[in-house]
Length: 116
Length: 201
Image (cartoon, rainbow over all chains, first blue to last red; front, side, top):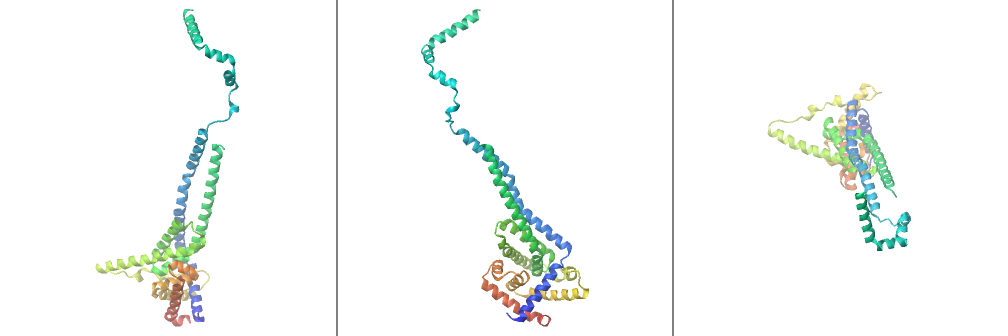
């Protein structure tokens, strides 16, 4: 590239930069408004996505909780000791063998209460 | 693991995503603020109308923000100017159609009457009126000469000289090869040197 070409480029660049620096306030204001509109267009999509973020979080937590509740509880430590006593007690088995007697006895007691 | 922990984890991910989005928005704002004034003048030289140029620049900014905000910021400049150049070309196509319709109805649009050079001229501080006048005339002469260039040569010259894009960035902005950029640019400089002649030697 020749010296005259470089001189032309430099002069053109200088004049162009001066014309850019000389833009009036009204034009700069319109540029600023245009830029804000562009950012709004970009940020609008982000905001719309973020509007769903809390709902998404709650839904995810609900799914996790539901899955945890569906898992069978295998913790035998929490089993009630009274239940074990009933199952293991010898007299309880006898009670089951005489279940008809106790059912009759219960009926009799009710009749007695009715009479009394 | 509880439901509360799950909500906390989701909240953390959301906050990180929002922080990244805000940072990207700040980067985009800074980029557009740096490029918007030169882009306006380049578009204005292309269409000879400041209002139309402002609309074109705003459209380009919105399209960049909507479609390419997620790209590497280093790619924004050529992408932005590609969008803007496409907008300028579309504007000329619409004008050509409009002018044909106007001719059909017996009317013509004289752009020279709509473009007030004095009103659009820069008014920088610190220079005498004579200096301003000389600069205005020189810039007007340059703009006229640039407008006379073929479209591709004009684009190559403005992107390389006015915006300062390198050959690779100009090729992306123009949608052509780097070799084509060099050819268009060389021919543009040669034509301008001939047309501007004595004022620039």
